[in-house]
Image (cartoon, rainbow, N blue to C red; front, side, top):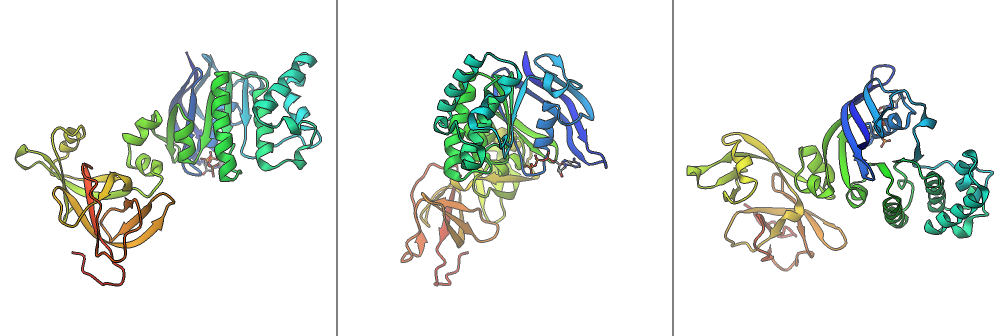
Length: 367
Ligand code: ATP
């Protein structure tokens, strides 16, 4: 039985704005499902409908096999963590975390033990007697997390819980969330607009745009085999090359993507060749990640692009080279040597290769 089922769920806000459009989605028992999408795509609205904080305009919501459209929030057995986990300012950390157990009239001894145990897991055991105002942003989010987890609900709903934290703290807490919710085995629906967070945390990712589900699958499925150009672009940490190409199948010997001045051929053994060949004679949009291309010497066999470098961007362990219009951007492992006219890197074997020429000062023609 799925823990959460949305069956054609739609949300139209008063005034007529369609925020969620006929959403069909399931979260399985114990699964960490990440809802990913740009700002305003309807992720929070969806989460709030599951929590019972927002009315469902049409469609059905099922929680643990129970029809839940009209269940009051307190009867849903869900705990929610928000972006700026609002804490009770006059209660200590201990008082904040224990609050849900006090409300549930849990045994005080058990409550004390549970709070200490959780605060250790969240690395805030030394702050138990402090008030929220004296904590850092990261510590406050940990307390909010502790308060959500303490009662062991059947479902966690997390709405961008890390977005107010700095990069280091985000990575640290992300790992802790992952291990905590997996250790507890509680189904979790986690909302974010950060693709790295989604790829690293999720069992499955559901990608939304303008209220519509675009794609759903494991991180590897949606990254390697995206259903739409939107998914491909959104999951790419670096700008995805989207280029128009005409599909040709000369004498049925291979499949060719004709970009105009450049062509890429795919042998029939390529797993994508058959699907692409279905568009023979038509123009399609081809998505190429910069890291799927390899810089090669000027004289090289096999399909290649040739373009002059317009801009180089430093990305820590590699560089991203933007080439002239119509030529895909490519990752390069190290900055090109300004003394050389052509930047070369053998690295053969890639599906598509890129050849590019340095522009520095030379005004060289890059045909
Ligand atoms: P973000 O990541 O910025 O929080 P989101 O994907 O969570 O974005 P939502 O907060 O669900 O998006 O909002 C979806 C759309 O619905 C937005 O265009 C927003 O302006 C609109 N919206 C949200 N709440 C209301 C409301 N109460 N009345 C009218 N429109 C609303």
